[in-house]
Image (cartoon, rainbow, N blue to C red; front, side, top):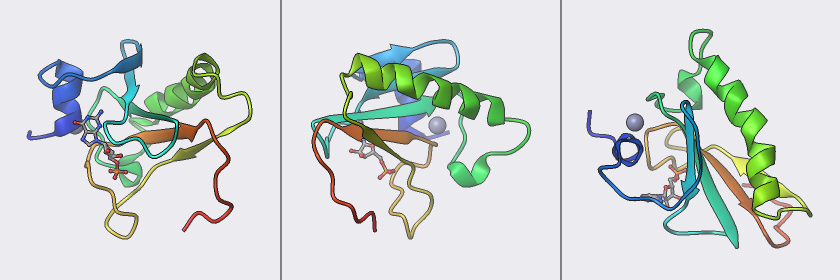
Length: 112
Ligand code: 5GP
Ligand code: ZN
């Protein structure tokens, strides 16, 4: 399968890792949209939020258990935003489920 984030998981494409375990990987976005912009991905290929189901959702729980630890290690003491773009209307560009952690400065109230 031709998937950019699977290639990052496999080490075929380098990334700036901030967290890794056997189930998930977190790395810095190549085009940061905030002072801190980290992507958190499952090591299993799930195309988007729309592909989450009863069989694969345990890794999603693990991602959300880990996000506060990553936020703490990144110094996001004043808050942060977690975003997952799903599908065309949301401008999802990489079809491997990922959660953006954005923080480090005051964000706009409006989200869309
Ligand atoms: P999406 O638009 O699908 O929600 O987010 C995809 C994100 O992946 C974008 O923020 C983009 O900057 C990031 N991205 C695309 N290619 C690469 C890459 O090769 N390395 C890293 N670290 N981030 C990437
Ligand atoms: Zn993938």
